[in-house]
Image 1: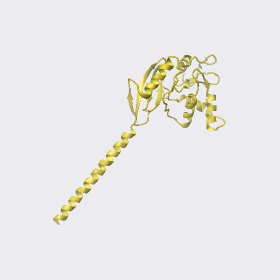
Image 2: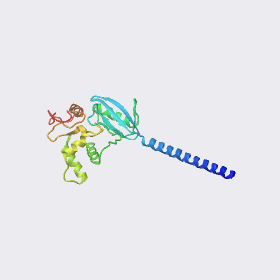
Image 3: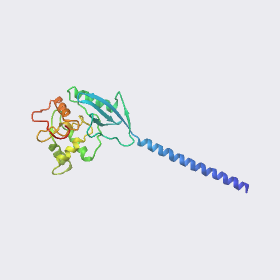
Length: 219
């Protein structure tokens, strides 16, 4: 009987240890999963002729380039750790070099890795924006036509395109400032009309048929 009690205690201790080990293993796994879910993004501020520009990037690509008082600021995914850097490296350094060339009046011969976040439709619109040559402008209607052709549609709403252009998270590098209304109105720029004018002037774009609307968005 005593031997049976001792064996029972021994077996009970083994079960307790097994349960404890299982709990610890689960806790470690849960902690590891949470750690994997936390991503890091790097942020730096670039002083430009059109104001301070805030750039945010992952290890692989640029996520956003925002003006001060951005109309539609990008919100990082929940759990993202933001690290502010004083001396950019990697993707941010590439973006800074691109901006240095651009604001010195040169046409950058490269594009830093970009990863704008948005719906499939918005990404299609942003891809079209990247095709607009330096110093040139296109209309919302022209962008709508190009997107419609890509999607195999007869037509596309220029207004819907305008919404996608306005929500471009990577200003200047994805050149939404080169899109104008069919009548030449410089409307619809989240960075503000004056910045749009400054950027087009820097690029020596033909401004003769363009004008600043008296009323409208992003004035």
